[in-house]
Image (cartoon, rainbow, N blue to C red; front, side, top):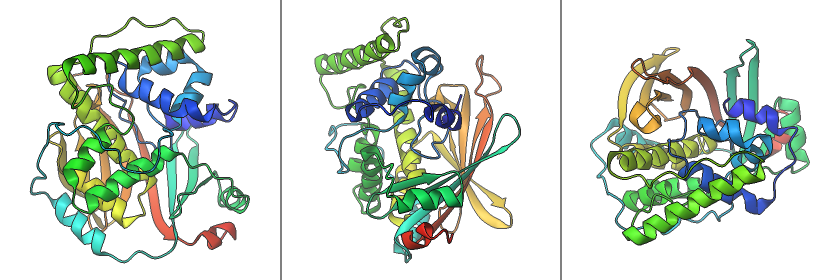
Length: 346
């Protein structure tokens, strides 16, 4: 099951209480013992560990897939979270060029396309306005209707991670890095004393247990707080996951793209390559299998001239005992005017 499957399921599940959003995301994102699966969030959806999706059930997933409810400001974050310098990278150069570019319109339009298991094309249209509103549809017509009715699907986590990306774009990359890692909570205990870190992890485990109980499912045994390489990989997973999420919810915003690229340039588990997409120069950004749970890597392809995303692909690891399921999502990103969206002129 991935985010588009969850989208279909959620249509039949009542919306959870607003206070459940942050609790669910923090619990399932940080307290499970395996990293978030390497699947791109085309809207505000999230990839869950296999046990989480299977055991919690539709109601708990409905509470969990929507992002947190904390505000859109950048969190302070711990001060000693393993700083990594921004290395010389084509991403840094591209980030500077993007930030300097003019930006038309008052909204960003993201069109997400994926082939469903039955071979059909599944398309999602999402508009992110510069005021923070979010409108969704499965066609130009339904998107126009949602926008006209002001059916705002925004959740504060979207504003939170895009604010962090803007912070990185404007120079404070290290502060932004810590803020992005802890955007959905600090169960990993970054910057905390050992006792405080143990308590943060225990509290997150308790949140997971409560969600399983609420779903009427057996509660998994508590897992020990990660340390060493496991902790490093989970930190990398959170940074990759939240940063790439910011890219896709804010893809058509130049400042957000710039900050995302600067953050990715700090990651030793991200490699940059060159390719070609329909005659256009492109860069491949590969998140290593180590920070994706070991089952496979995630490859995001962006335009080498403007950083706009072309696609995201999950590539199973050949040597994994439990390889990820291959998948590919395509993206079309552009700047638009909301008035044109309401009129169906996109």
